[in-house]
Length: 317
Ligand code: SER
Image (cartoon, rainbow, N blue to C red):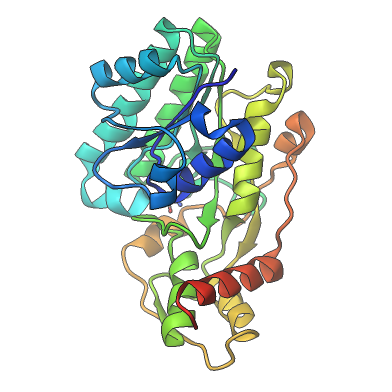
């Protein structure tokens, strides 16, 4: 019987992952966590939840003991844009929370840990097109630095203590349930809300800023598939490249216009432009496909159609 703890259950990915895990493993077997941001009502109402702070190791051990947790998804992190505003506290949260969870996994019997990295681990000296699984990584953002250091730590805990840790270098994630907060790829979600609500959007990245993105259903499937894969198929413990779909704001705007012809976009790049310019434009995820069978279903057209339909429903538009 799996007992799964999801740290970061109020976030864009965590809030949907809790619901999907409850569907797969049974509602009572997936424990959501509440810290300073409240998860959506459906997360609170559909299964167990606990108030706790991952920075507090005592609380962490208590929750794990109480539910006899044997799997953890640790998704809590300060994302790229927010981390640039508070570099040192963000480094502290991203690193210390991971080390707390790794130590817990080492000392208590936790069967599997999922901890995601990001395309932010790459930097200006990385090949930006079809970025390979293994290449030069010199990130320039605090978030990217913390994710790269985290990748080294999770691999270290696998090599040294056999903590079964698995992870994906998430591209930008696009979804319509919980909005993302503080990321550089967030424009690709905001644009849909503004297009549906107001018919126009001011983009904080320039028109040609191509980045890899993934639609939430594909993200959830990849995450759970990796966690379900037999251990011998998970050959990379420092996080797998996952590419999703790559596009820039002007291509996305053109796709939205097919559904909302009056939609207008203007561009006012801010500090996040420099972050985006240091990240890959597209990702080579052939290693994840070969090792544990990564697949995806959504292309830009299919994703755009669902995003607009669902956000229209949300706002009765
Ligand atoms: N979506 C994240 C961000 O923009 C990247 O992992 O910070």
